Image (spheres, rainbow, N blue to C red):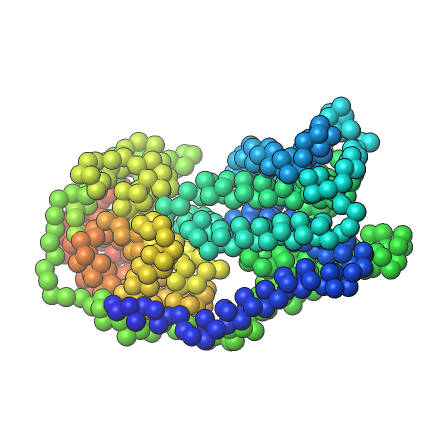
Length: 600
């Protein structure tokens, strides 16, 4: 594959749109700073300072709620910790610039302690758990009144100057708020554009597929929440100094947590710039309404947020950034299932397969789910360069065996050992360990990272071997062309048809450069033409020295591909050996193939 071919996936038009978008966002940021300076009104200064603060908080929240997909509604915990740490230290004569980092350190510890057990929860239960912890921190702030002032709150000593973040004019406060916004945006952009960002999005989209690609899903989430907490605490310290007074109900506020999450949802959750656009849209509306209506506007901001959120859900489900992205890129046709011109590179050759020594040993696998005995003494060996077909009726235990072979399930008895690159046999314990030893897998129900492009999906696999984004991108493009996906690199994964998605999943695994490949029904649900392509693809993969275990129900493909076949029925191996001999076995015919196949 030439460099020109690989680079052609990024067109000049796409580069031009990207630059235009950056220029537009640069103008938005410039307007945030310049507008209040030009107008010179105190109230306008206050509005733009508030925009910067809330945009920074929402950007920090988005690292967890958007990138990692953990809907935290208790994020004001970290904001409140930063506020109290800064004010308490100021009352002790210590500058808030130091208190800011002290609060960030405390917030990181609290984030890890609170989040680690909560990561075991999913869906609304995680959100409810974060709300519960938020209430715990509010009660603690009320209880330790000697330190926090309790319900009375704490006043900030009016020490004027940059050292104390307290000013008579608004411009210095705007400079600090704008600087913090730039820091939060810079950190969010740095995370999203690097390996960590890809891992977080993959974890959010399909956690099991991310684990199979060697992603430490808990580790990356903890890192994300630690960074998010630190940024939130630092902004909290400055906001406390700007307000000059704090108390528990406002610092550990569920309303504040929902607000900052809503800015991201409206602007575009999971995007770098979405939280900024959400804050730019909503904060001025509510602040101007409060200024114009005074006491009559109490609670108006909640009404405004609710109306805007409802309109966004109905007409802009991906937020403002989703609309801008569609406008910038135009309408894309759904990717078809025809291969690109490089698919010929994976055609079958006439070279006889070279079967080597064992690379995977499966011995006596037993698995029970309650009183159900799913697998019973399953044992077989896979050799280097071999294609092993695993067949059997539905419910025979094939996918359960795959889950044990890849670390997603721990066998009750028996072992799975894998020959490592060091020449030693290893018994891995989890999907990450299996991936590190060179085992990759696909899933029975295809699991693409839908929010990513085809290129980014494959990059998640490539990151297993490459740390640099540029190296992973190059490897992903090369793999895509070999898999017949070159023309779809910049398409979203969910635009592919079933056959394309299955090829994409194989491509993602192949970018990991595995030595053993587990294919779980990659030919199910695809047409006859795609079955032929899949057969050619698997043969070409085997010719690179990769050993394959394939679960399949398409018997024509099994017979054409397999060097050996293992037949499972009711969790037990009833036959294994040469495909031609196995399909004539009376037990196999009775349990799986049927008399019609034997007579064919």
